[in-house]
Picture 1 (cartoon, rainbow, N blue to C red):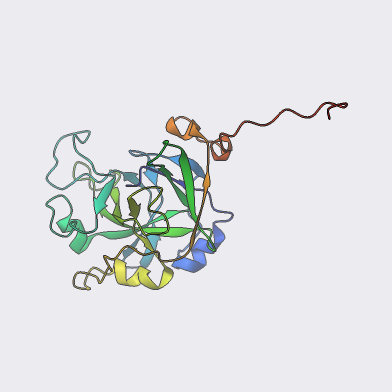
Picture 2 (cartoon, rainbow, N blue to C red; picture 1 turned 180 degrees about the vertical axis):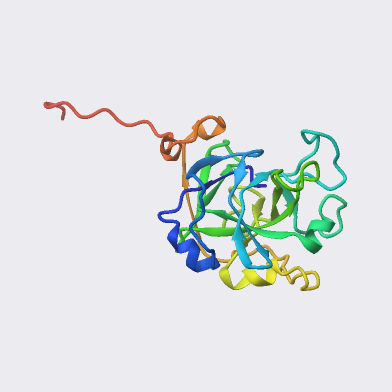
Length: 228
């Protein structure tokens, strides 16, 4: 699964060129972005691609009432097209969720790792979204991240991973007229990844600062002047 990620690009101007956006996204850097918080999203519209912050945790169309009793931060790519919670969004509302890396907690020991693209600053998760039915005009839409079985390169960290798209797949994913979209369900990486251990400070949602990126490794004391 994917339960935390970050969005802290070195510069947002590149997003204008890569996605054809009219202006740089107005979205703060986030080191520790958690469910129910705003996520940076790109989706297609009549005027082309545009940027829109969305609540992370898709509220399905059948959910009614004020604050959602049900929301989904992840959707399995193997079954999303047929699940009642996702099948309408799969057909009609696909999106790109922007990230500079995501976190996963190791199966053994529970230490968090930051997983990033090896040669890209910003990359994209395949996502689904739904409008806010309580307030379609001013209410914030919600989104979910598609996940698949983990590729062999990272399966030792976790058995699931977010579906990551390379730029050549953006259009194919976004335009829902493509029947079923040929997402290859074989777990493989869209591009090489790197990973590094980071701090367990990430466990607390309130911690959203660069200190989260420092590994929890004790610093040895400096040697004394006369130490042998």
